[in-house]
Length: 269
Image (cartoon, rainbow, N blue to C red):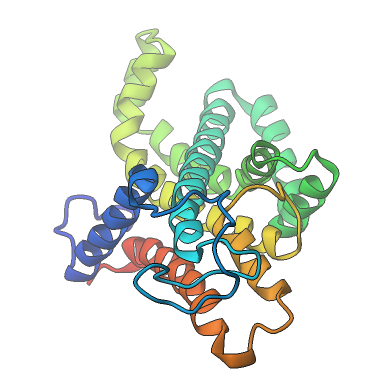
């Protein structure tokens, strides 16, 4: 789904990615029905190896790891989609305001975006998440509020060209409303918006996993990142092949999700 290729047929790779992501979304939607046990249930034997009763074994506290992994689909996927949507929406709305309202608004918004871009996003997000109350909402807000500038820069550049088109100029000359101008612009910028929504969703998963790895965020949220952190905290992770069923499955789930999102954008033939 590259910019300007929305009219082309999807490649086999992109279709495969959509199928994989559909499975992820299905699991996220029906996680409570798929989980064999509640994530708060630690009545099972600790560090039980994978078997029919415990498909991925249990952790040192007696939680069923398969249930934790499935529950992570709901939290992590929903968080990533929300962060991707709102960060893309924020960048797009600000880009439109900069182009529509004129030089003063453009200067202020662009200068603000440039200030955020100077410092790596991950550093800013981590800094904000550290000093905020450790909740999932605050972690998501930190990702949204500090990851919109790159979306803004790309969409603004696209809008600058589109604003000079004859159809937009005619609409503005006829005193068309903001809604009328947006209606003329949307077909031209929608491919870029869709692409950046996917990229921002991808980025949100990476950020959440990274923050959790460093112990930042809601300590009670059973996300994939927290499951990775819990596995890494177990001092005997590599003893008696425990890592094969405690650590590797969640890493594979994260990698497949991130790679599928990336190939969905860059997988055209």
